[in-house]
Length: 314
Ligand code: OXD
Image (cartoon, rainbow, N blue to C red; front, side, top):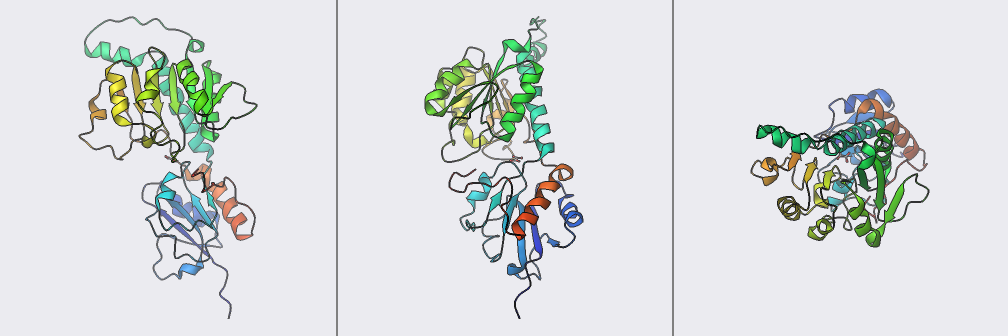
C-alpha cells in the first residue's frame, strides 16, 4: 500500500514565543504538529518550522517539502552541514517583526540624533551640558541592507524627518532616496552618514564587513546601530574606533556570541549601548498567516513565499 501523504509539521525553536506550536495547530488543523519525532516516521514530515534547529535534524525527513524559518535571518540554517539543500527554504516576513524593528531603529536613531549618549554621560558626571535640539533632517541615517526590514526602517525614519540613504551589495533601482551599491559605493556611503544602521544578512560576503578600514573614513561624530548580526562587525576594530574617537557611539543588539559573555568588554564600555537581541522578534499572531500560506503552497506544489537562495546564503 502506498504511504499516505506526509501530514506532520515539525516545529523546533528553543527561543521563540511559546505560543507558536499551538498557533500552528489551530491554523493548520489537518496537520499533526509535533515538537519532536518520537513515535513519528521521518518520512511523514511535510514541513519543518524552525529556528536554530540542531544540525542533522532535517536530513532524515525524506519527504520534506518546506523548511520555514521563523525569523528574518537565515544564516544559522546554513551552519547545518547536513541541510537538505534541495528542500525550499523560506524566511519569515512578519508585519509584527517589521514594525518592532522599525520602532527600535527609530528609537535609537532619535536618541543618537538628540545625543542622548552624551547627555547620559554628562548626568553620570553631574555636568549640566546643554545640547541644542536640531531637526532630524540634519542627521543622515544610512541603512546598510535594503531588504524588507531595511526598506521598512527607511520609510519610518523618513516619516520622522531624517535624511535617509541606503547601501546594498547590488544596486536597488527606483527607491525614493539616494542609494549606493557594491564595494565601490561603500566608502562614499559611509562618509555621508551620521548614523549607520546595519541590517545586512550574515553571509560569506558580509562577514567582518565592518572592520578597521570601515571606521577610517566615517564622518566626525558618526554612530552605529547593529541590528543585523554580530558577525558583520570585527569586535576589536569597533572597540578601537570607539576608543580613538572615529566612532562616537554604538548601539548593539546582536553579537558574535549570544548571550554576550559576562566578561565581554562591550558590557561596560561607556560608548556602547547593549540590548539583548530584542530589537524585534517574530509574533505568531502576525506571522502565522505566512506559515499557513507557505505550507499550503508547498504541499500543493506551488512556490512558497520569501524563498531563500542557498547559493547566496540569504
Ligand atoms: C531574526 C532575528 O532574524 O530575530 O528574525 O534575529
